Image (tube, rainbow, N blue to C red; front, side, top):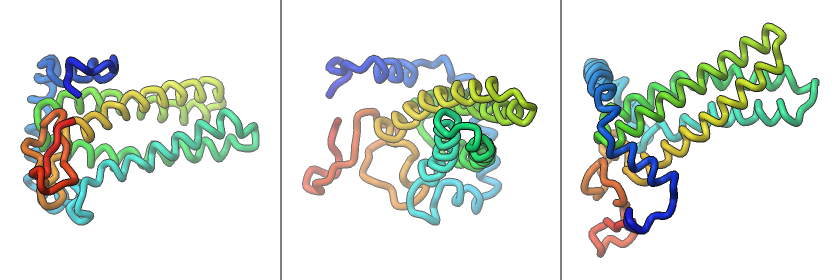
Length: 210
């Protein structure tokens, strides 16, 4: 499928984002700082990139906060009064789990291509907003404002959903992060190659276009 054939408004919007230089000033300010920190701590960098696993750690890490927050929302909406303490506990655990998860994503982002970094910057903004809303929700619940707390967590869940779409675009469309960070590199020609995927048939050179 080529760009002209694509009928997905969401995909067209994200492609416009990845090709726009609007977020480049943010990328150029933040990326060198992260890169320098990781270069000073190569063992930490290898861990954050997932080298002990042989593939990126960040996608695995994201399951924890998303699962905890989703479970909290389900209990909020269907669990009744008896489930409230459990929902609050899951919400708080999700906030804690999001912190190391964000570090793995930041490490991968710093080593990715420019288009991935543009989408990743928006991904990070949405995740930060969601994290702030979830934390606010937890505080509101602790102070007795449960209705406002639930509303904040629902808004945060929406932000996580949009952010997750951007994350999927970076991995499935842009091939992020570069595979060589966590293990042997693949045959993908570039780490930021939109519409390029690793083929299953070695006779075709290992590369097919989507």
